[in-house]
Length: 358
Image (cartoon, rainbow, N blue to C red; front, side, top):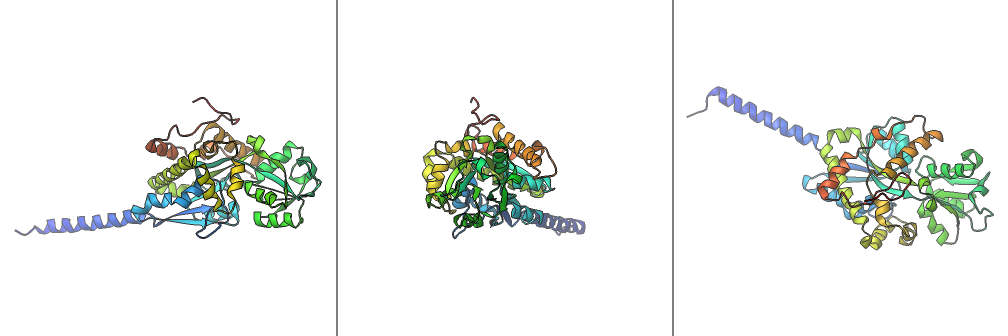
């Protein structure tokens, strides 16, 4: 018995509707997830010059593993122009996620970039002041009026301003030279500048005998910086589940990297980014990895973000203040930690950096 004509028409319509829905659903799944990294790569394949869980995820392919069955590629983009270049890519809708230091992330948000902070990817990041070996500079106070280089618009600039302020100075009291890390190191070696502020990677200059460390923030945790993982609001709104799964992959990376049983392997992986393992050992000396690699928004991490926004505004690095609570999006991480049963995996700290009772 043949189907009645109207049933044939309904079946055809239903088939068309299902095909259209399938095509729509397929179109809503991106072919690739685009991740921006705010530093130049090292090696082939390119690796992060970063002491973070993101570097672990990159080398171990944890985000790729999460999406392999879906056929979704993970594309990594490294920016020699660091944070400012990443902000430009975000502005041009060329990235979905980004690893950045606190200041460039804040500058982007203050300038209208619609981003959310998903998790912390490295806290208590130290800043160092190096000078040539024969320099008369013995303390921060001695750099007044001298040519001091650092990369403006990056996470180094906030610690620089805090350090100067603690010594009765501002950027106006030094002859600030805006150079990227590579150019600044060459300038210091050639003694074209009198000093250089930067991160732990600069310690290799000391080890080569071409520089001397005058100051570090190791004894001043509130002067340090932190890195964050950003997602664009448009991606998070369209692909909430993919955002959640990306955070879960990074939580797995942070958990593995935070285990002191993996300490030497962590340093070996980080060394693939161009900074020797010996430097990472010194940078993390006396500190459990879990203290600095916790992805959580504990009181210390949130306070550091709030202080970073306030300081950036006070130092006139941004023109507009904003509320951090409207920027961070902790629900993704909390859901990931619950799924992975990692709710108690990291210690938490109060606003001054002291441990909270379990």
